[in-house]
Image 1: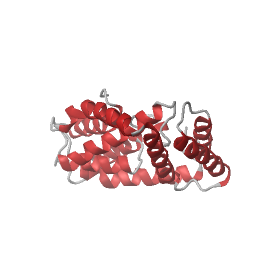
Image 2: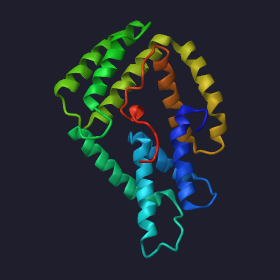
Image 3: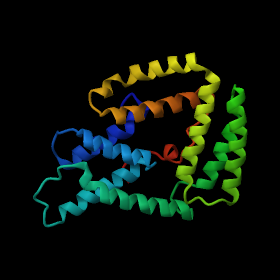
Image 4: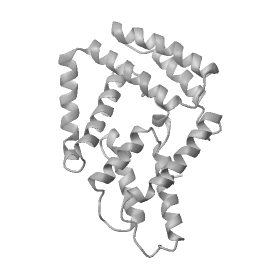
Length: 223
């Protein structure tokens, strides 16, 4: 894994794909953007790796098995299929090791216990804690991934507002310095996604808050 938590997802996908493809070529800009699409969709790392594994396993038994897989895009259909199975299991409450309702209650608990929140973030956090508890008790969990993402965005911007422009500028300068080595390898839009993820994580961590995401509760690794 890399020293950058936000880059770990991308690096692990690259390493697994390259190992299955069997040659040392790294990902192209187009392939990095494929990974970015999966990350923005909130797909856990293990689901993406499962889809890549399924694609290579199917290729090994196909008529074209003598031809090398040239691009990560070849795996997209199997990743989509793995993602759809995961979403169905999540909505039905049958995903092993992940209780979405319990996770929402845990997020609500964390929000109520958050430390040193400013006035804007405190207001958002308390309202969000109530929403999370209501959703956990009776709401639909089918679209919970995008729902959580929207709520986290709202909370993060409130934290930034309370921190002030000078504080946020200093934080962003530190993030940019840490991402410098990735600018040589990834397209600008992927680096910007890493930057936004790092900004959210650091603003939340400053108040002992987790990322409000089932994605971040999932342990990485091939399944």
